[in-house]
Image 1: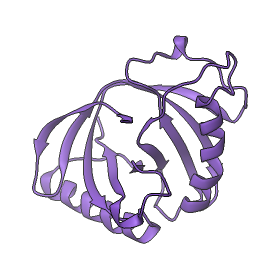
Image 2: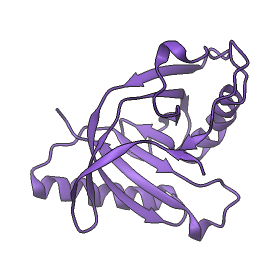
Image 3: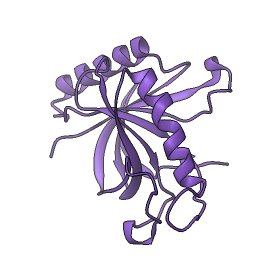
Image 4: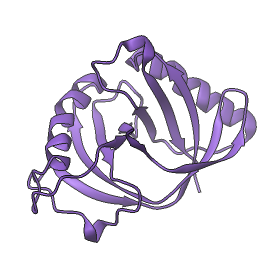
Length: 173
């Protein structure tokens, strides 16, 4: 089974969760395109990195989710597509990417608000889920960052109605 990014649930709401994510390292590609195009274009570079196209030819286990994040609205043309490195990975122990547009970045412990859903993570569906999450946060007095993360957990060949996805938004400190 594919390892998932580690977190603890701090509080359950009816449709949402308040989570605390453990520190991690991500491999990411910044790309300008629409959400679908950015994800498709960046995936190959990230997959090559974990498959051994790196400074040591070391293979790295695939984890979930694949994250598409933006600091703008979901119809943005500026995206960071990332793979979370296996739990316990530290930047100094990971092989350097051979492709200059793939970069490694550590992320510290962070609290986030999350909503999960089934089906394809289309732009329209993600926009609705993000709006619901941000509206809920405002009503609860929770201040969120501008960043929105679309987290996809399933391979593209799996039937769309079976896909599991999340919208995750960090809480402003």
